[in-house]
Length: 196
Image 1 (cartoon, rainbow, N blue to C red):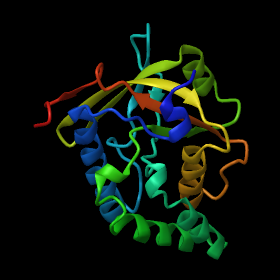
Image 2: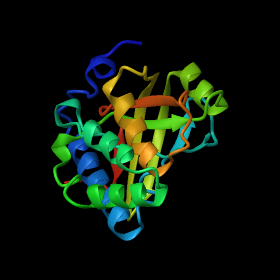
Image 3: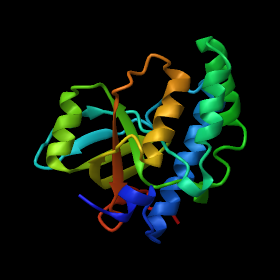
Image 4: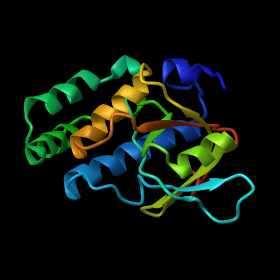
C-alpha cells in the first residue's frame, strides 16, 4: 500500500473535519498532560472496528505526532538520554508536552500511530484488513474516522517519533515493537456534533 502519507508522514487533505479533529485532539491531549499526568483517556484511546465486524476489536492508545516539518523527535530522544530514572524522564516529558507542544494544531500530522507488542494478534488483524474505523468518544464529542492501516518501518519519521514519545512513558518498550499508522479518509469520516 503506497500513499503520500506513508512517505511524507501526513496527508494533504483540506477537509474541514481534519482541522476540527486536530484542534480537538490537541486540546484533549494538553488537558491529559496538565490534569492527568499524561495518562491516556477516552479521547486518545479510540475503539477499533474492523470492516465486517459488529463488535470492536478493542481500544488502542494513539499518538498524535508532529508533522515531519515540525518534528521534535530529537528533543524527545535527548530527554530520554538525560536520565535513567523513569520517574524523572516521565516528569520532564509531561512538563514538555503540557507547555506549548499542543498549541498549534496545524503543526501535527493527521496520521495517527499506535504501538503493538511483537507478535500482536490485533496488529496482524489490522494489517490483514488494511483498513478500520477509529471511534473517539469523549468530552461530548464523537469522531468516527475511516482509516487506511499500514505498518511503519523503522526509518519512517512517524515511527521514530512514536517510539521516542512512548519510551518517555514506557522505558521497557521492546526494540521490535510494531508501529502502525492510521491514515484517515476524511471524505468517509464523520463527527457528532459536526464541528462548525
